[in-house]
Amino acid sequence: MITSFYTLPLQTKKFVDNDEIDQCGIKKSISNFIHLITTSHFGECAFDETFGCSIWNVDFDNLTNNNKLRDIITDSLFESITLQERRLKNVSVDVIIEQEEFKGEKNLNRVKKRVNIRIKGTIRQTNEPFISTERFYIAPLSY
Image (cartoon, rainbow, N blue to C red):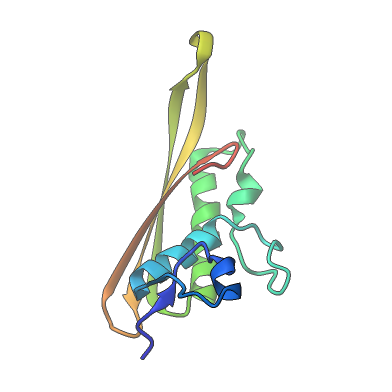
């Protein structure tokens, strides 16, 4: 049973220098991989065009209502995580979209949409519960 995984971001210089690579446990590794999925758009990964999610497709969409955006993101993440992250079973994805106002210079305010993502599941290897939370701002994407 594998108990140690590489951390992200990978420090490739350590590979070249034959140094010890930073490692983490399975929960952190799964969280890191889910973060990679949520921050990648479809087609970005040259060897697997199904890797990623649709957050990038709705990033500048200010016209679609929040319920429709939530459904698009939820469905896309659920599909991608169940396809790509095979260390999890019984996956569920909850997405909440809220508007947040930022005060800028000279009393100029900006409104951005904050996407709160909660992924729940069970780790296949240990049968332990798993929960991961991500928060992003879209239009444009930032985290």
